[in-house]
Amino acid sequence: MESRLPQSTGIRFALEERSIYRFWLLVTQVQRCLASFYVAKFGRPANGWRIFSVIGDRTEISPSEVARRTKLERDKITRIVDQLVARGLMRRNQKHSDKRRVSLTLTAKGRRVHRELETMRRTIETEFIGALDPWERETLYRLLDKLQERASLMFDGKQAWKKFDPVARRKS
Image 1 (cartoon, helix red, strand yellow):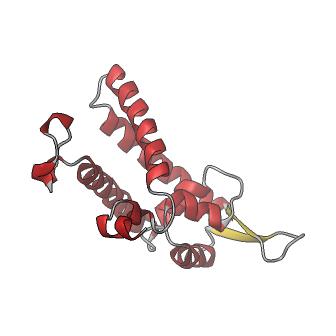
Image 2: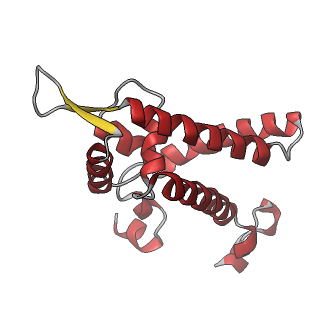
């Protein structure tokens, strides 16, 4: 299939040059670093830092909003939140008007953990993005905005893959 694509597109298809593969490698390296830091400092669950990243910037947030922002499955979020609540880092608050609705907030102890994580994330971000000149950073941010917008159009929904699968497209 690759050989049939026009060479003039400028898009690189070799594995080591694919943009998505390279993004994945970068994200994996950062995630491993943050997860290792989190586990060493605060214990399990390793994905707890992702939950802290989202909840820590808000006074309260619903579990479904956490799922949307972290891209973690809801059952994983529930398990992680259960552990964080048990450790006194987070609270589940029931809404008075609808007992089925829950919001999540950090406790004072959880806010301290969030501040430590935020300091680590800022240090990593400064060091990592600091490799770029100021104009390169602005270009990168504009490009990332554009790619995020494109991704939300392309990959929305559980069966987004069908848009790209030649067999599934023929059946539609």
